[in-house]
Image 1 (tube, rainbow, N blue to C red):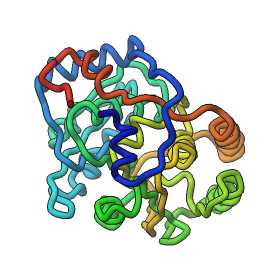
Image 2 (cartoon, rainbow, N blue to C red; image 1 turned 30 degrees about the vertical axis):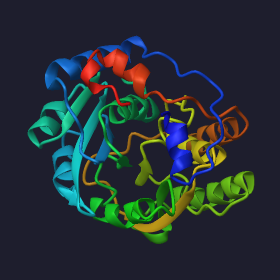
Image 3 (cartoon, helix red, strand yellow; image 1 turned 60 degrees about the horizontal axis):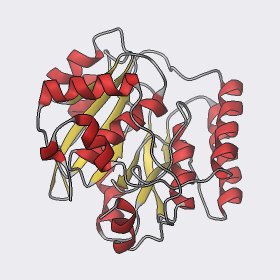
Length: 293
């Protein structure tokens, strides 16, 4: 059964898929091969927290330590996807207890997420939560976001600093959050308050169904794609704090906003849903024992 069929059985209205997923590119292929050599025939916990990381050696261990071991009675695993890191992010994350998948080339957060979703979809997780590696999001908020999914009320739940608390002192960036919330709400015909929040939780069917192609600014791509594919979307209040340490890897505010708007518009007007990636990815991983029926 495909993840689209599974999503329909769970109550979403995901439309029929319209395109074939691409094969893993050489960077992804090398990362997947390395992961299999390191971890073998691994099965992930029902709830898997996915953390993309670029040069976050100072923060990654603290972020991993904050992730609860269980959520709503289910075990939790952490997968860190390093995006061309040249510092000690990967070994520190492994010592902190996370599975680590290392992409050797820096391509962007969206590319790191795509690689992570391949692994999560292939290795048995039921729900995937995403947080940033800089400590801005509190993993203690995960249960509140997961609950409506487990209860069958939603397929994807975003955290919202607008409904919750934002500790950032960048007023321009916060104004952008409100601006893009209005733009995306108008484009989708439904209320969205925080499209760029990095804390979200989904059924694994969502990222293995939505067409994802952007190497950057992927939060809006996932949100818009999920809604357009018919998945049920909801929001819950969360707290967004300042980085634990170091500086942001994001572009300057104006450039960030222009690129973000480009992704929003491009995502809204392209064909959206794709078929289940689980089996093609398992073939890439090269372990027949991992194939889900």
